[in-house]
Image 1 (cartoon, helix red, strand yellow):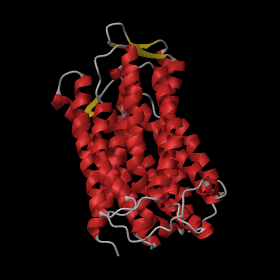
Image 2 (image 1 turned 60 degrees about the vertical axis):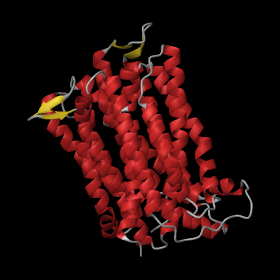
Image 3 (image 1 turned 180 degrees about the vertical axis):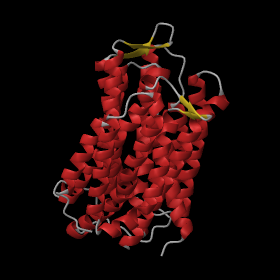
Image 4 (image 1 turned 135 degrees about the vertical axis):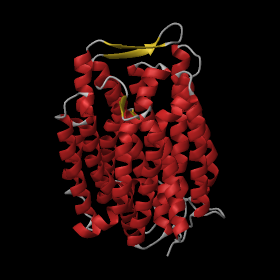
Length: 446
């Protein structure tokens, strides 16, 4: 039986990765790159697409490498312990806007973004794999997974709610604000990752293959549960990715800037904060909800239906700041579904890893969980790239002029507003319905 401190330690790992670095990258980066850093819409979309091709190679390689690591700290924990500082440092550099021209900025953005993806992979793949070796008890796996999601959403809530107030406190230009916040948040992410590596414990020994081979990679494509769950994982991150990536544009161009209600500054990070705290609460309730409905599969299915229905309902809310609380209410309702399914996804990856070990005779836990982080990055970044691409088609133009200043032009405001609204509602709804369909083919009945 794991100690409470270990569960808190495991939660700190995703508080750092999911609640700070990935949350900022998912929500702030599309708007940051186009409106503050000064990349064109095309450059932003291409950057995220190139990074995904990079991850297709690095994530499985990292999973296989982590599975074969042997040290006094264990198999997966040393990657967190020694990867903590690089994670925070590169994240801070990524939020810095150098005083370069268009070509220099493009080179800097591509270099830092790809480096960030590599460091994130080196930390997050082993972090996810830890769940497979901390306990053999299925209920305790659900608990660890629930703590993980609560940690991620709790820190996401703090990060997003405090963001506009921290910007105001820092002062100066938006570029300066993001650079300073990058240092602060990067340091917190490094501390959380290090604490996770030091507080957790690996109880189960992995069954390693005698030597490296490509057989585990080939085995994945004969593993039906893995194939279906990976597709579902990509879809969940498409669902979240569309909403997070377009939230900044929604406040800026559909509601015409921040909305202040009774002294509360509602910018795009605060807008999504209401969803974060809901996900935190219902992520904690996910194990009880799963027991109530009877299986992880049924619980995931109902969660996706909630997401689909509420996303469609959001589309019909008038595009007017006076309806801000109705919009927030719908974000909260959608987040109930997200909160329920988020812990389940990682617990189900542990089930798939157990299934693979029984079937193949050797452990591929790291490789299995690497597909989860690959799905996370693939879904979030491709959705972010599509947001940039579709906004460009609708009439959103951004870039850097000859003096290095960021320039944004809207050539067709109604079309851009309509596209933003659909990207936050109808596009995610379609993805949620696809999840319901895929879940019908998932064979593990736990």
